[in-house]
Length: 309
Image (cartoon, rainbow, N blue to C red; front, side):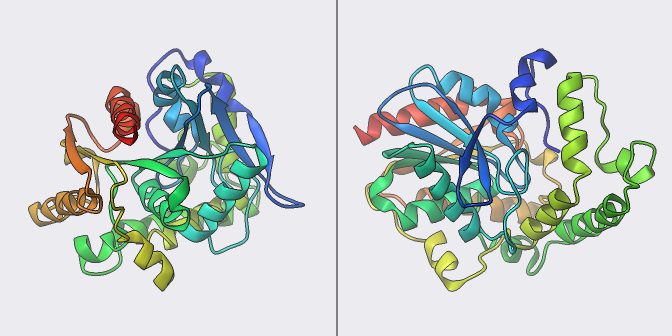
């Protein structure tokens, strides 16, 4: 569970229920949070296991000028589970179908936090004429594990082991607030959440389908096909691009050594270099920029809109 946006707990209750359920097949819908109006649609993609709540502070501000949509990936939040594996390609295909179903057409400014950035670049590679510009929020390339660890991330391996244990308990109906596993990983109720949000998080984390999705996503935070790998590095030409880099790496468990930090920031320089009009900006906070420094994301989106003309 990501850090919760700051503010009165009750003000977040809109995120304790489904917002707009966009049908993407005969049996599945994707939950969208749609706000604002305007000729440009800003698409907000969360990082690993993120949900619409993660964008609350950013979306509120952007909605004063743009039409804005955030979304729950299939199996997360209030979106129906999708077929596995939950690859970036599957997530992008779901998003494309949901945008069409909700009649949210281009042009798009694509904003991706962390792993969401990988998915937004894949979207831009598939639909370049629909993409007005991009904002990468402390994101990376899909080969980040190889760059940081020379192989699979030990943190993700540990995460999957925890999720597998939670899944066993959930399937048996024994994942309850009294269990040590629940207290260690889920830890609700929380004082900074309203009763409705605490109930929503409890329901989500104790669903076997959610935990299966989480395990599948954790296995595919890298390119799953040659097409995904190529799209990850596709030059963006004149498409405006802003890359936001969090300066405080103490919140990032995967950035432990100086070498890993150098590799991480090196990826941000490379990301900015994908566009002839790309640049990188430092943000004085930790990895959760949309929550800790939402104004930086808003300013970047506004700059991209101006650059796109």
